[in-house]
Length: 234
Image 1 (cartoon, rainbow, N blue to C red):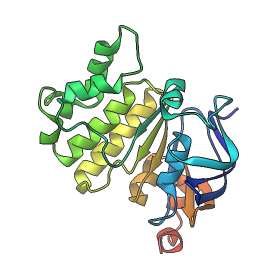
Image 2 (cartoon, helix red, strand yellow):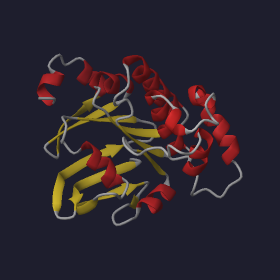
Image 3 (tube, rainbow, N blue to C red):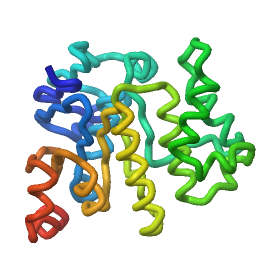
Image 4 (tube, helix red, strand yellow):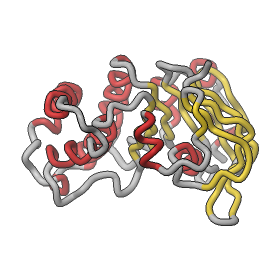
């Protein structure tokens, strides 16, 4: 059984349908990329999984449990974390306080230990742990956003354009961090505009256009298609 399954899902906001008849699956331990042009519905797909968009048709199951109609806090409690592209940190709190806020649903005594483990993955922000988040660089802020989402110890992490706006060096570094997160046991769905980075670190890729899935293959196969970007990013 797949970790996450979307079956014939149509979704959007209010009465506006953005996605139509989406069928996809995510297996445990994978990194799966969502690619496509601006306005294709990639962020809406993540929002649909996380309960921030309305499901009009179909169903989403996580570990066999339907997510349809569940609120984001209930979905997070089931084991799904979300690192959105915007408004993804608390700028007037310190780095460490942001991580503590990321563990808001937890009641165990391992939170401080897990913060130190997070800093092992992200030593770049460990050095700034007592600094306000608004003083961080763009790359450091994106690292903090992902790190904060990890504080709930999710089985599945949703990342919306984690390298957006970053310089190439910072983007490559963050991509390596995402691979390390997977190696530590977290499954990842990643929306990316940087197709080359996404394809280089993911196992499979879905391409969206006009609110529908128009292609699905292994990322390795997409990488060898010389006309990939011209076909799907017009």
